Image: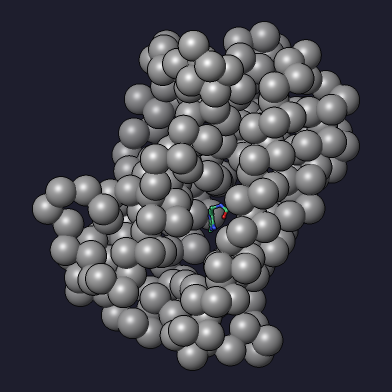
Length: 232
Ligand SMILES: Cc1ncc(CNC=O)c(N)n1
């Protein structure tokens, strides 16, 4: 078995803390991954002005993710006992780098002027939350769990728009592919695997902080979709 398929394989056991939380908070999770914005992409009824608003705001969000992901990488260097975490997180850095370039290309395709976008409240709130997680007193376990949740919501949401029976408009399929593709799904599984391993060794105090952070991420994701629909 190759190293990569082994990492994917390891993550397929369904007994970790993350799976337990997903069961416990199923409705909240579904609220973030099956939001009306995503359902409207999936059934083709999405309002293009909403899509463009999402595109511009998400470009700003992804740029704000860079220091957060860098802080997760730094914590992994200092606190992780498994050197393969670094490879997975570096993969995340690479994917954010590609995303920023993709947003610029996509924005020009849709005529969205990226230089004049003003971040809206839900976006600012989410970015401020990310910034709070970069602090050095936030444990690696808490930060990597948040990172998993952030990536998993996009993966699950956009993959849903590509499933059989979806009526996603042709011109939006590339966007859905960006986060809905198999490689991104495997990367999210690797993040979940890392988070589960850390959570297994965590104290009750860190466990409750990590659970709280997952719920906050899900709330911010719902706020972000709402904002994209022009509802905030
Ligand atoms: C609001 C939001 N949440 C998660 C992601 C996916 N992670 C990085 O790209 C994203 N682009 N935007």
